[in-house]
Length: 399
Image 1 (cartoon, rainbow, N blue to C red):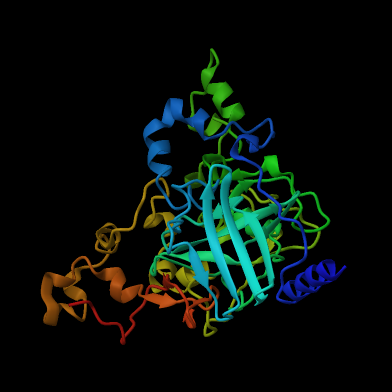
Image 2: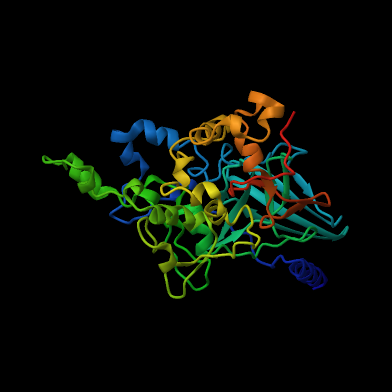
């Protein structure tokens, strides 16, 4: 009886730190994750026959890797001894990350006394983020999806508290709702209540070709038929370039402008070509209101003089979403297609040394207030490029 009482007390104390006294749950192994059963979708592999170069290139982009199954390659955090421990501000609580033949695991250990130790282990079920700035991880509890308390921060190459999680606590109850998956996955079958319940095998991870181009099975059938379409417009596939600028911007704003679902509108209802306002309540800040560099990319771009003075500028004017695109030189060429470098106020002082630095000054990296994490007592906020193209007097070019 005394042992049972000790265990009950320990579990209760662990629950008080945000960790429920529940048995560990484990993610479905990769073999059990199957493509969504929607019959009108074909999957990226079906696109390869005609678009191999484009698909291969796209599969190197951050969009493609925005979610994935856990593997040694997809998880950027380290599992090697010494690098797999995260010590919190609570000296009695630490986390350990382990890679085994059975999968990848995150364990919280709370020591209240030498004889009073409680553990909770959950397995990595879904990797969120390409790792360019960091990653967070999800776990399954039955058919419900939650966020793990420890994430990875690329700049530090270290494990950190998941964004928004208080240091020194172990929280395993942050549910992952459909709006999260709508931007970090291509499709899923939501089966609420509660809001984080899904058919696990329905998740199609990463942003696939059909997320932007629509279901492709009819398109493939038409081009494999004895009488293929004579015009691409008859190809039963979405091509964003055929839409108006507003509809093109809406396709990007689905994930790059924030917003919450409108009441009674199911997730995944929006398709490129539709009016986003019919599906999402998208923030429309006043001209002088602060817009976060992470959550308001589209709103910031639309504030730019470059955008307002053009009838055709969209996100894809500068971004080729089918290619990895992070080199400053790639974007400078876009700027210099319209602007002369000699017209820049810094040219007289710095000369052609600024030729490839346009976005450094006019789209500076700034801290986001929407993603805040911590490690070793330090507050962590990633820097994101401000998409309001403007003059920022305080920005200095690197020497």
